Length: 373
Ligand code: SAM
Image 1 (cartoon, rainbow, N blue to C red):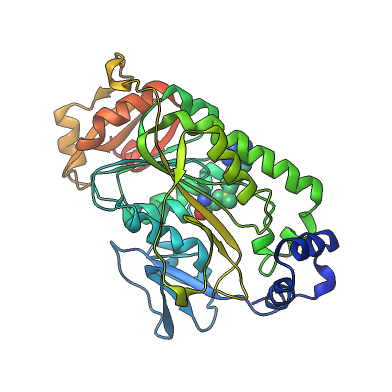
Image 2: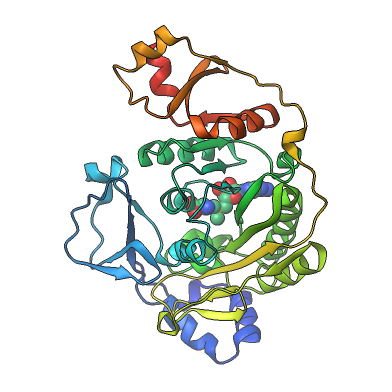
């Protein structure tokens, strides 16, 4: 629980906010001095947690506010990936996925800025089991944390990559959904995180805004025609949010997508498909997201290019050994980068393509298997 003094909030931030939302900024600043909420999201394939005193989060079926903040680090269920401690506003992604129907069919999804894994674990619970999620994190040390969280979550239809966004240009026209939860100035975290306040500056806001534009432009080519793109930040300022949205609309072949929300949730709709969470209006921290669909592009069929696989299948006799230890149903075992990886059979063609183009750090079962065979 945090309770911050107004004088620890940067003055330039207050001025920007007043310019942006006028008198409403007083209410927001007041909310930043109140306590933040504690919330968790339950793993829908484990469905175990021990919190009795909990309240539903309206926009995410698996999300709950807790009345008090327990010591999560001493809870075995936390370490077993039975739930993820996540800020409630971020869970709005679950509502968007359902609104755009991405929970209903087999798709390829890219979570481009994925560490520590909050949105990735949410995506895994909201896409079909035959879909493939690629979680990417550019910073190596953070990719390790992402890996731990994904392993704990326990799904197999996921790859973790450690690439720069620009590397995804090699995979043109491949993903049905891309989530860019962009590195940002973090104003929405001021209430919870003292560092976010200390690190804030106007220079950093400008730097973040231009980096966000670059990231989105770099990765855009990998989105399929008709595919969806979700852009999010945990900040309030216009330059990283609506100004970037305007820039994307001008420079990329995309349109905003209408998303229905319930007025009682208190989420501010800035334009069709663009949402701002303000802590004085919603039960959560500051968050921004915009939902787009790609509407025109040259179609280059990636599958038309011959893909040279980088792996061999594990021999039947070794798979028989694995069967004693691992549930091998619907999985194939492949030798990749001196390890053995378990891959869902249905995802083999897509994974083969990704292997040939990107640096794949881990697939979910690789370590378990390496120790056995
Ligand atoms: N989506 C994550 C979650 O829900 O747990 C949080 C992502 S955090 C807001 C932004 C991530 O972007 C960080 O992990 C950071 O390392 C990464 N990042 C930083 N610079 C980047 C860049 N130039 N390109 C891509 N990602 C970057």
